[in-house]
Image 1 (tube, rainbow, N blue to C red):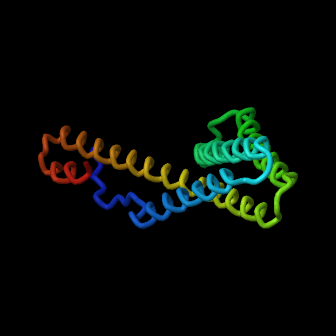
Image 2 (tube, helix red, strand yellow; image 1 turned 90 degrees about the horizontal axis):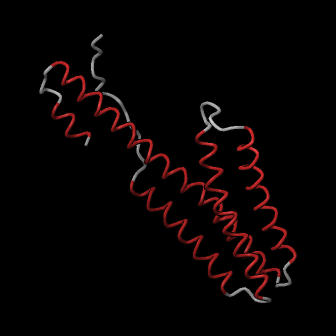
Image 3 (tube, rainbow, N blue to C red; image 1 turned 120 degrees about the horizontal axis):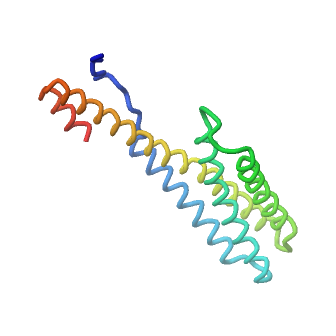
Length: 168
């Protein structure tokens, strides 16, 4: 049952430039939203509502992206959890949109808040995917290194040592 070690396994990783772009985009979106909300004209209650709405959208976007990725190949979560995840995200988006629409502020300010909010949500999904891809690549490398080490130990072979060191 000895299987040859596949030295041609390709583990895809994002480039450093992509990771910088993803983090920079997320940081810019969060900064723009925070700035817009900090200087939001009108009542304090409107500002508090919008901050909660943005945070609710942000957290449910991370949860939704994790849920979709976890259930990508097979259904691992219950239908009740699926309902909670999708309805929470929809509720967060609708409630925040409603709060933005009903606010008594200038239309250009609303447009800025809307674009910043949607930018934040899209960058959140991209950041979640990038983080998950890196995690999965790390797991794949560890599994590959562990298999190579186990095969080398079974053979009493030291030929796999350079490969093991490069995988670490």
